[in-house]
Amino acid sequence: MKTAINDKSLPTPVMECWNKVKDWDNATKFEFGLMIFNSLKQSYPMTEQDDDAKFIEEYENNLRPYTMDEINAMLDDAESDFAAGKGISAEDVDREMEEELQREEAEEARNLFYNKMINKPLYAVV
Image (cartoon, rainbow, N blue to C red; front, side, top):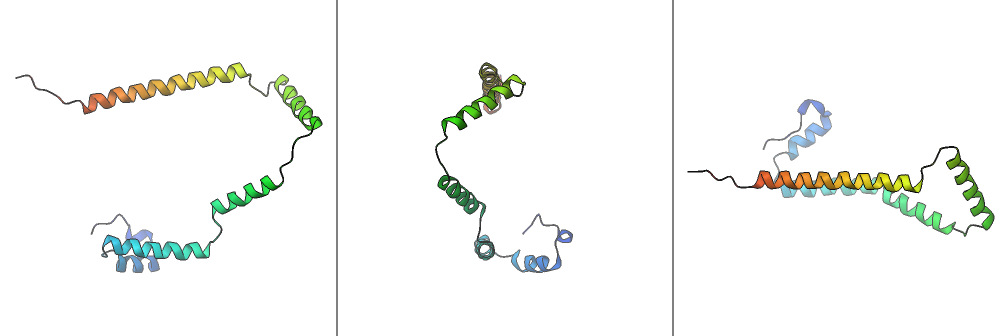
């Protein structure tokens, strides 16, 4: 069985393991891989998804409605940022989004055309 593993790039214990595993059938290799994966999962029980769920739960537990003073302060900050040139107007956002949508549609149409041309059967004139 031909593999893409470069023998010189792996540490010796890994190569010793690979030399035993490389001739196994795919089903056995898959089971072996699952066994390794499950052992790693036990070693590192906290996953990124668990971190995200914990963050979301903490965030939701600390939610409270904004007061009118907080809302007015946020609006004042946004207006001063916009006046200082840090923002972008809704009209500019709409224009940029429309341009991006037109670019995507043109690229999709171009790809569709090329795919039809590539997959089109060629007929010889006899």
